[in-house]
Image (cartoon, rainbow, N blue to C red; front, side, top):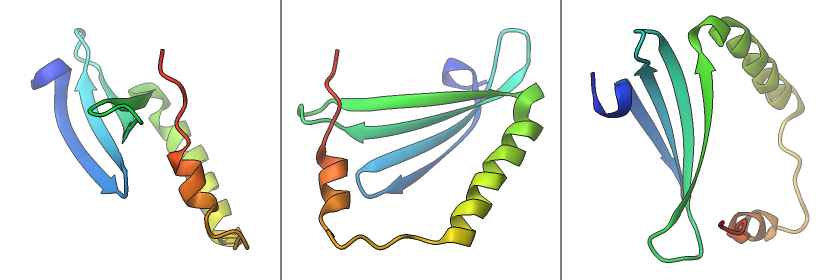
Length: 98
């Protein structure tokens, strides 16, 4: 078993965000998925991390609902915005840290 119970980990780096997909094992030997998004803040060397945990017994239903969301996005496509700076402004606005 790896650090913090990790048994498998992979990551995806896109622009200023990194997504981690970590399969972990709890003290009882149960496996679960921990999805983490990490992105830099306005403070040098600091990152904002948010995570979602999906337990093994919920995996089937989670994947089913996740797939519905993906199918919706594929069916409805990307809506073009006249203001091309929207994405940059949205990404640069960082929530306040505690």
